[in-house]
Amino acid sequence: MSSLSLDSRDDDAGGIETPLSDNRLRQSSVADLGVQHILEALPEPIYMTDASGRITFYNSAAAEMWGVRPEIGRSEFCGSWKLYWPDGTPLPHDECPMAATLKERRANRGLEAVAERPDGTRIPFLAFPTPLFDADGNLTGAVNMLVDLTERTIVDETAQRFSAIVESSDDAIIAKDLKGRIISWNRGAERLFGYTAAEIIGRSVTILIPLDRHDEEPDILGRIRRGERIDHYETIRRRKDGTLVEISLSVSPIRSRDGRVIGASKIARDITERRRAEEQQHLLIREMDHRVKNLFALAGSVVSLSARSASTPAELASTVRDRLNALAQAHALTVPSTSEATGRTEQTTTLHRLIETILAPYHDCPDNPQPRATIAGPDISIGGAAVTSFALLLHEFATNAAKYGALSVTEGVLNISCHEEADRFVLTWTERGGPPVERQTDGDGFGTVLGKATVRNQLGGEIVRDWKPEGLSIRLAVALDRLGAQ
Image 1 (cartoon, rainbow, N blue to C red):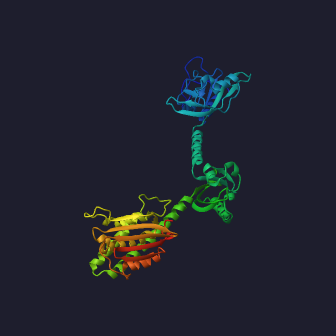
Image 2: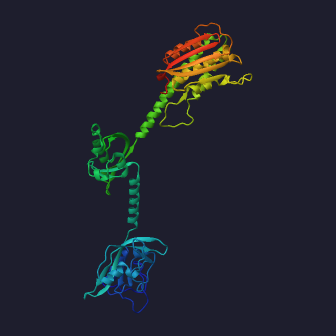
Image 3: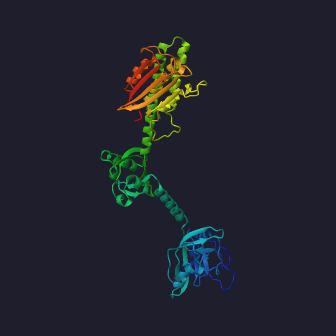
């Protein structure tokens, strides 16, 4: 192909410009004009120069990529406004791939560079400059085809971003072929299953599947071959150390450019913590159900037992209200100040604190500045049903003391001592300074029935009352292992 000689007009078909000077290149043949139209019709940017590097032809695709129309016969080596190497270093026009081809008289194909348009847009491209020689071997110029890499760059950047997302994901992301061989393995998979990518790529995915679940893999591969997607399939897999882990598995087909299924991608998420949270939730629901039922049963028992000693409806209502209020105060001691959804433990209180709460209404006495009640001896933690049992017992002791004993007069005092005896905890309730005590025996009142039902059956202990003339003394002994906080 010889250099093209161009006339002084714009060619509507080819978008070609020619200078108006005597030294312009002239058209050498009708065949050259045909080649000119062929080059113009090509979708890739193409341009030509003479032996000195002056541009003699460019097609519309080249002008579109450059964003400018170079001056035919004057612009040299490349029609772009500015040039850069791929790393952003400025590239002088006389050092570009076309200039190197003319200087070295040989093709420099596949070199990458970046063209900047006047609007600042940068277009990465590959250059394929090839020198042209006449029949005598003289260099007459060169032709260059440019390949716009913008789309490839976008694809590469997208692929890099996607790869970074996959690699940094907390979930295990795995790819396998249709034979079940692992071909991709991210860090999430390494953390979840314990294998490094080097250890497991190329091996069968069945290495992760427990023996009793090997029938899952053929079914999964069969569905993938049919182009189906599997969402949130919950199963169990085996780690490198042999331990089992519960996972949620999503599997999608991988397709080739022509749409054929060539493999599968898997996203595995560890659901161990979710399972634990669900189990904890179910446990709390069962516990709440149990406690609500117990609460109703206890309320029914309080009403029934209180009715035995009440002489009027008003007295019954007052007694039941006071006893339920005592239970509410005791229950408040076991409620945590903050709630945590996980790691919840049984809340406890201490016996001393419970005693102080039950006796709080009787502390104030304007005629006697001295404390009405003292507590001595070691404290002990109590929890669960033991709190309810102690609350009811202590409420009965305090109520009787306020009606008939030391707390019914201003000068009366109450001494409570605690100590341990082997596998039992002993509380001694001693009243002094109250009205003279007449000899009494255990009857069938609430306190007596409560002592039999609660102390013996629930607390594994005993209760003994001693009506001394100077005041009532109660010895309450309970099993340490029934206090619910050991």
